Length: 282
Image 1 (cartoon, one colour):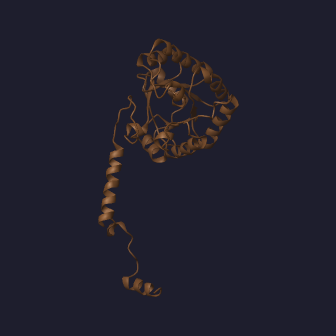
Image 2 (cartoon, rainbow, N blue to C red):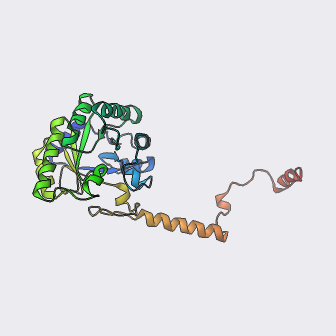
Image 3 (cartoon, rainbow, N blue to C red):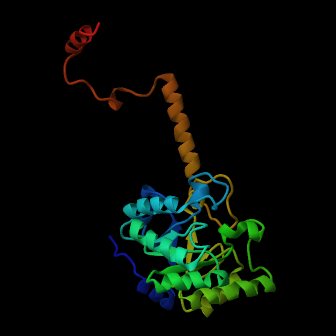
């Protein structure tokens, strides 16, 4: 099994131009599969609110939800760098609240770093958590927790005015002490500039070339059917496979085809002995 990467490995990969491949996972089996595939990092994203819990967005997700899923992912991928996503409401109130919840993340779920959304507006939060000795990953561009303010799940930085704001956010995240940055749904020309400008690793989700790429596992595997973001490449259609299997199972149960003798545990004593037992209760 490959050795678990450290923050120094990610800085080295940026310096050497080596791409980081990572994916979201929310449960033990998916995390295990990702580790077996050689994934560099796993994000336990608050996207679990939609793809696992069935909410319309990420806002209802709680610290308890995130920690529980992080614990499952850590058990499934003990040798992979795990990012814990700070849910909405866990860092917005104060620097003290942000540090308290970041500490809880590390203590209870053994993640390697935390991620939070925002740039300039959360600069003090990033600094406070970093000063507490916890690695922070920033997240700018399309920030799902702020989708209401953004007018929905819309790409950002597509004109000069908003692109300037995205750059300011990126600079603020680095200045505050984050060790890396995730950029979501902005034009590739903007991501490329930010990647060159910042000394810390810059990762992309639907934002073109950077120091590495993130994708939502439920999207790439075809498991989440509500919608598929423009920037997703579907590598498998697991939903179709599972649905077909379920249909076959229903059909066989109703037709009496399943189970057969090979799917049951046979008695160790004779049928006659069991008939005698049954008579005792007649």
